[in-house]
Length: 317
Image (tube, rainbow, N blue to C red):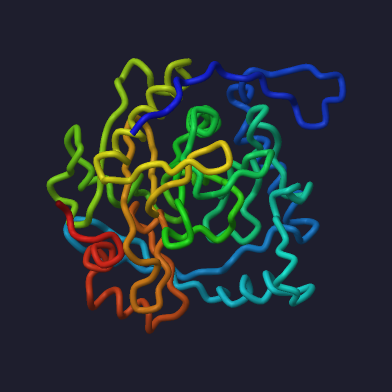
C-alpha cells in the first residue's frame, strides 16, 4: 500500500478570530476546561441530549465488560427523524456543527464538537471542517488532531470506518472519550488482553492488528502524527485493507474499527454490523457495549462478549 509522505502541520485558526491569527495546535491544557464549559452551555439550552443507561458488568476471558442498557435509546431515533421525512435532503450535522455543541478549533482542519446524543460523559467528536467521506482513509491531519486531544487527559480515541463498522454519519469524524469510563475505576476493560508488541495479541480471539508507537514519539511530539499514520497503514495492510482512489483521496477497501490510546493502536476488521440485532461499534472492542433492553443484555451474557466480538470481526488469524 502506497501513500504520500507525511505533510508538515498546518497552523490552526482560532474559532471566532477574525484577524487571521493562527495557533499551531490546540493550546496545551485547555481542552478539559473548554469541554466542561461547552457542556454546561449545551445542557442549559437543550442542545445536548444525554441517553440514560443502567450499567452491568459481564466477565469474560479475563475482561470486565461494561454493558450499558440504554433505557432511552429510542429517543435518539425519534429525534434524528424529527423535523421532516424528506430522505432526498439528508442533513449533515457537522457542516456546520451546532454552535451550542462546538467546543472549538483543534487545528485548521478539525473542530472539537460535543456528541449530541451522549451515553458517556464528555464524549467528543473530532470533525473535519470541510466535508470528507467517513470511509476516506485517515491522514496525517487526522492524527495530528487526534493526538493533540489525547495529550490533554487520559482518553481513548476511536474511529468507525464505515456503516458496517458502526458509523452513523458520512462526514469524517474521529471520537474521544475520557478514561476511565463513567462510573468505573478501570482504565480500559480490554487492557488485560492488549499485550505484546503486535501485530497479534495472543489472548484476543477476534481478527485484529495491534501495534505500539516508539516511546520517544508519544504525547505531543512533532513526530507523533507521522509515526501514527505509518503504524495505522501497516496495521491496515496486515489485515488486507487497502485504499481505493476516489475524488482525490483514498477510500477504504473494507470496513474496520480503530482504537488509539497512549502508545498503542488496534485495528479490527468488520464482517458484520450487528450481532442478534445489537449494533457493535469500536467501543465494544475496548470492552464497552450498549444494548437497548435487558433481553439483549441477557443474549450477550449467555453468548459471552468475546464471542459476540468474534462474530462481527471474524476469528483471530
